[in-house]
Image 1 (cartoon, rainbow, N blue to C red):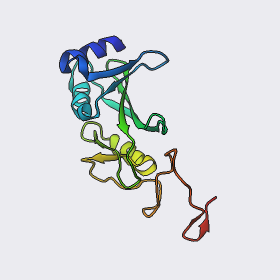
Image 2: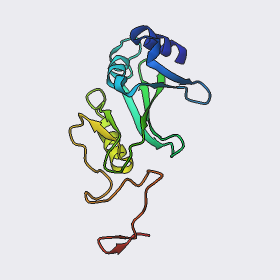
Image 3: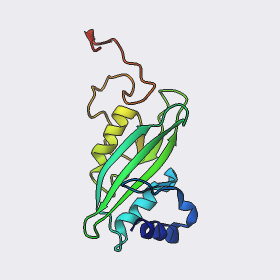
Length: 164
C-alpha cells in the first residue's frame, strides 16, 4: 500500500516530491521538502482515495551534530481506508539557540497538530509558522532552552530551586 501512496504523490507533485524513502521496518516512511509540507498534507487529507483524516502524532528528533538536522515525523492514519503513512521532513541546525528552525503549521488540516506542534516548540525549539497559539505547553514560560536537544545544558537552579 505504501508504494500506491508514493505513486499518487509523485503523480500529483512530480517525482522530486519524494526526497528519500525508508521501506525497511514496521512503518515505511518518506521524506519530503519542508516547503511542500502543507501542500502535501492538504492533498493527503483531501484526496478521497487516501483521506488521511487523523494525525496521530508529530515527533521532533534531534539527529545530532554529525547530521546537523532535526527531523519532524508525522504519523498519519486514514481510518476509512485503513492506511498509515509516516511523513518526514529534515530541518537544518541553526547556528544559535536564538534562531529557531522553522516549518509551516498543519493545524488547519488536522486540529490535533495544535498540541503536537506546541510540544515540539516547547521541548525542541521548532517554530511553526501560522500556528495560532505557539507558546510553551509543558515548561514554564521563562524556561531557558529546549531540553530535548542534544546540546541542551541543564541549569543547576530554576528560581533558586535546585533542579539537578
